[in-house]
View 1 (tube, rainbow, N blue to C red):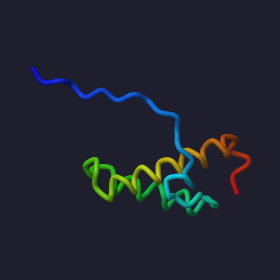
View 2 (view 1 turned 90 degrees about the horizontal axis):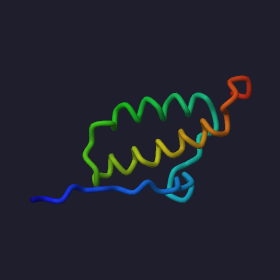
View 3 (view 1 turned 180 degrees about the vertical axis):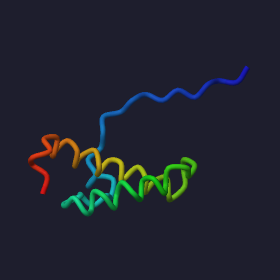
View 4 (view 1 turned 90 degrees about the vertical axis):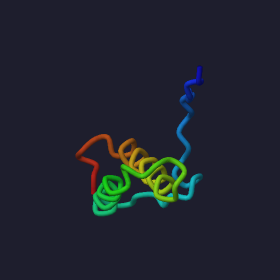
Length: 73
């Protein structure tokens, strides 16, 4: 009987700690979300999947910092 892989949720790592550049503008945010769509189907362990993880973390940080739509610039 094979064992099922179980992952434990981890505390998010800051984008800078995993090599991601922080998103500093709405244009960068839009570009990052488009790139995430392009990378969505790559398997875990590939360079594309690592890029995807960095982008998702940077997007999450942007979202947390700009949770009020009136603060976006």
